[in-house]
Amino acid sequence: MFSVGLSSCSKELDEKLFADYAAAGITHMELSADAEDLEELDFNEVKVMADKYGIILWSMHIPFSPFFFLDPSDPEKQEVTLAYFRWCIKKGVGIGVRTFVVHPSAEPIEECDRPRRMETAKQTLRVLAGFAKQFGAVIAVENLPRTCLGRDSKDILELLSAHPDLRCCYDTNHLLSEDAVEFIHAVGDKIITTHVSDYDFRNERHWLPGEGKVDWQRILTALREVGYNGPWLYELGFAAPASIKREHRLTCADFARNANKLFAGQEPTVFGTPVAGLKAWR
Image 1 (cartoon, helix red, strand yellow):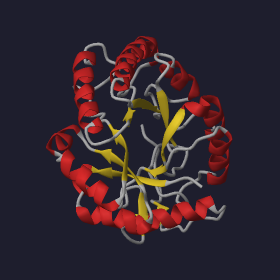
Image 2 (cartoon, one colour):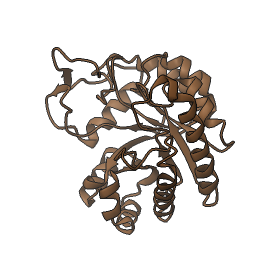
Image 3 (tube, one colour):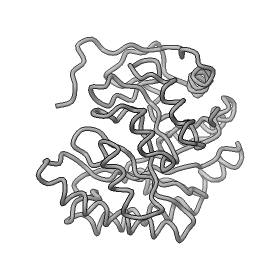
């Protein structure tokens, strides 16, 4: 059984949320915010609340937008992106975060431009990995969908080759061209954290497990086979996205129950159904 975590938006970080985590038995938190909100976040207050309720500040999802100035794979934006990511890492390590999740690129990327963008992304990640290592921290490169870099295990392994300390954040709803178990076995022990959510195999959806088509027992088995020992960390909002109809706003207790049923090999409780006529991303 894995520890259970949630990726929580900085706008939601009040004492009630930390109390709800603790009451539900959720032990790990990922801090997630856009660039503007992160600059306004009181990191010290977050640390105080985490310590009070015994919540591990496990990871920080470094902002990946706005694309007009943040893109690790764009030579013209590389310098600014690196400077901003370094600032994020310093803020995070100051409150005990040691895992930093990074998107390796923005999108769209034309096929003819992928080699150039891949090389730039590897340069950026190499610098970031070295910088994070100074603080005892690790960069976790997230697999991404569609035309982004990191869309399959081949891409991820190429990105990770940039530095021996780079690791992977496995997002369960981003693979559109490769089987999940094949991805997990290929990347193996480089996976150090997760983003858990369900989808329809047509596009990323960020639904609660059970609301989509993922075979969760195959994924759990594969993660155990490669020795994964990080948290089972959900990345979806409490409110339903436009792509799904749900009975109620999710709670921390709902996430905990969902995880415990999955860990027990049972079908999770389903609260929502996909919106009829849902179309894939174009």
